[in-house]
Length: 197
Image (cartoon, rainbow, N blue to C red; front, top):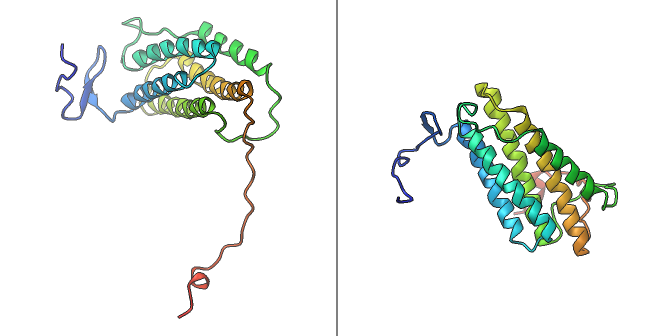
């Protein structure tokens, strides 16, 4: 079977067990952003992550694939596509707690920086938050039946990725980059800044 089907050449795509929709449909934006998050985690795993963290992300990548499948299915119950549940959320929470126990309490805002691996995790975290927003948009605009567990999972995952970025920096002996509030400067009128004739 060829990788290209030509069925989407005019800007539409087919949902699983459902109709064809525009490629900029809110449902496509939702599961497309989940796919982007999954790819970002793949990049993070290629950035010399510790083996235990890479293994955790491998499990998460499989779960994100299931989330994408649920979002791509207008009637997920009919096709047994609701995979993510309370047990998956509880595992994320245990992982967050276990990793946080190894870190110094956070007393300031930090920038998404540090080691290359940590920066990749911060990028994945920001994509995760966008995926969460896209799913909320899908539900709010279209009253689509998305499980509450799926939304909670994405929210917890964003938290976990933030903690993992800190853990990776800590294990590598890389200092976190504190946010330093810029000093406000008085505005200068445009004409005052112009050179004299």
